[in-house]
Length: 131
Image 1 (cartoon, rainbow, N blue to C red):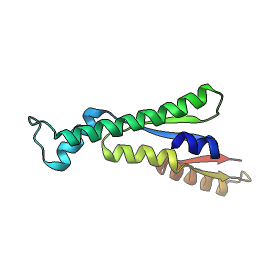
Image 2: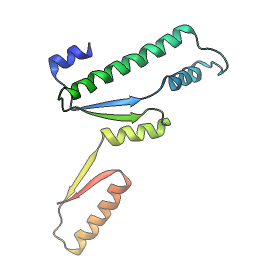
Image 3: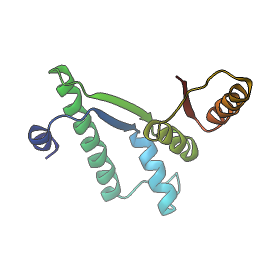
Image 4: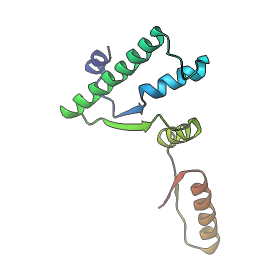
């Protein structure tokens, strides 16, 4: 389905790939369903984890093959094994990239204002461009 969609619409500029592992998915299932670590997962849960993992790998392969064939798609790999707060922060940094452009006449009042803005940008992960 994804390959057909790309044939009709074209390749995306960017693909965000949330890299994960089967072991992490098993742990997540155990945590969400209160399955002790010493017990085996139900067969249907194992099958679902394997199927989802394979679908993810197959989709990534489609984009990797498109790149080999000359597509200008960029794959951005995000570590899905990070703790959730770090993962969300990384995703926000990729998705919500903000830029502030500032022009000054170089008088002292505006230089002070520019320094304040630069510090604020640093604190809030905003790119500051002095034009």
